Image 1 (cartoon, rainbow, N blue to C red):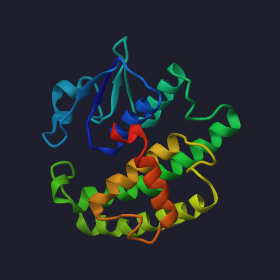
Image 2 (cartoon, rainbow, N blue to C red):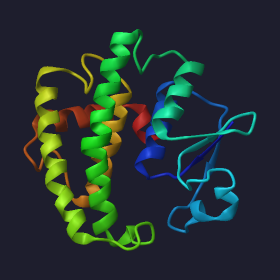
Image 3 (cartoon, rainbow, N blue to C red):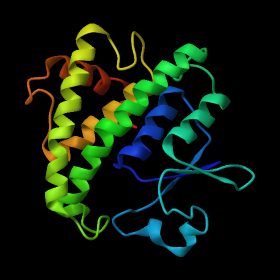
Image 4 (cartoon, helix red, strand yellow):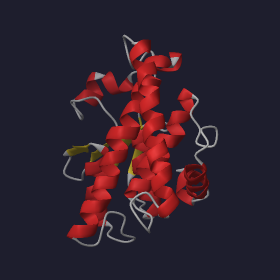
Length: 205
C-alpha cells in the first residue's frame, strides 16, 4: 500500500501518529507538497479526485481517502493496540469524542489558520481574514470545554488513550499557527494532557 501524505498538515499527521501507535510498517509514504500545489496536479487528481491528503492507495489500486476512514481501515487490519473501541458501546463513545474534536476544534482552528496565515494563502485563495478571525473564539470555547473534561478524566474519550487523543493533539499543535497555546489561555489540564501526548514516541511521527 501507499500513503499519500504531507508532513506538517494536521490530517496527514493524524494518520502518521495512528500508524506509529500501532507500529505499522510496510506502507510506502508518498510525500505531497501542498505549498507547491502538487495535490492539484492532474497526476494526483487521477488517483484522488478531490485533491486532498491523506489518501491510502490499496493493493488493488483503489484509493481510500478521509482520515477517519483510513484509520478505521488500518484498525481492522491491525487490531492491537485497540484505539477505536472494543465493542459497540465503547466504539460509539470514542467516535463521539473524536467527531466533537473534528467539528468543534479542528474545523474552526483550520479555518482560522487557512484564512489568516500568509503562508497558507496558496491553499486558501481567496482568504477571508475576518472569517478566519471569527473562528478563534470558537477554538478557545472548545478548548475550555475540553480542559474541563480533562479535569475529570485522563484522556479525551475517557480513561484510556484513543484515536480521539490523536485528533485533539494534532489540532492543538496546528493551532500554534494561530498563536493559541493552552497554558497561555490558563487551561492547565489541557496543557498537562498536551505535554503527556508530546512525550509519546508517536508525537514525532
